[in-house]
Length: 255
Ligand SMILES: Cc1cc2nc3c(=O)[nH]c(=O)nc-3n(C[C@H](O)[C@H](O)[C@H](O)COP(=O)(O)O)c2cc1C
Image (tube, rainbow, N blue to C red; front, side, top):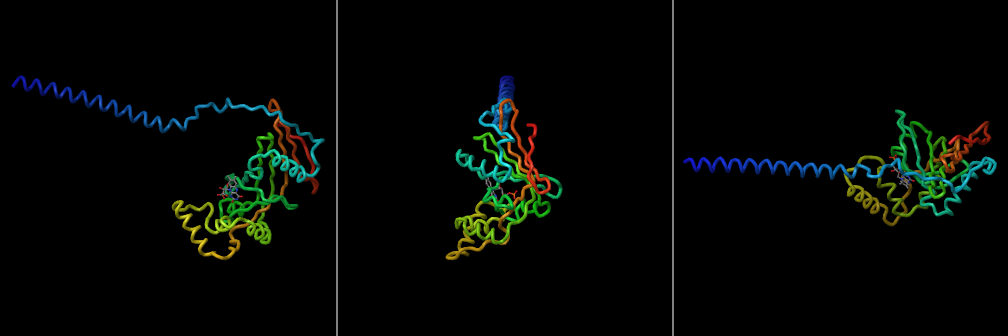
């Protein structure tokens, strides 16, 4: 009897100790799993240690062209020549009716006398912002040339003729995409989008799809242009063009 009580006591102790060890290992495993999940979010490199000196070029008010459109064309030409990836990609900032700004990339498709032309869905988030607040800002950044250009102005819809002409110049799949994608709306999944695309492809088989009314051009008519050239010791060159009585004037801004 005594002997069996002894065995019960010993085995209870062993089971208890095994449970404690098991719990310990499970908690260790759990901790390392959580750490593994968190770790990728922690940037190992200290971002503030990343520094770059800009020294490629200079920008002087005596050298720039008097017309900012021409100055823009000059810099765009140099960006294309320098093989900057996506030289026409620009950040477009808009502001909603609650004064909340929002930015996204769009592609510059033309620079007209009226301004900078890009294309999008009129029902998208940017489209809704622009209906409520027709002002915006464009930003080009060409790191290979250590240059940025900021353009601020009023954004209006392009004419139907301009939009039609560009729409018809797009590749077939992109034309269908304008019908299939309810840009900026929540959709169930990727399959839903591909299904929609396939449905519109079937619908337009053998014909050239016409431009949907909700898709077309915008033109930003500039009020200001700012040309920025990186320089050593953060003493960058900034030349701003602004409108004074319909005339473009320029001034130097502190970096
Ligand atoms: C390089 C690049 C170019 C883009 N060009 C366009 C464009 O020309 N038009 C457009 O509607 N969206 C373009 N997009 C997608 C937009 O950035 C954005 O996701 C989309 O227009 C929806 O924005 P919204 O919800 O603010 O309206 C581009 C994205 C990238 C990264």
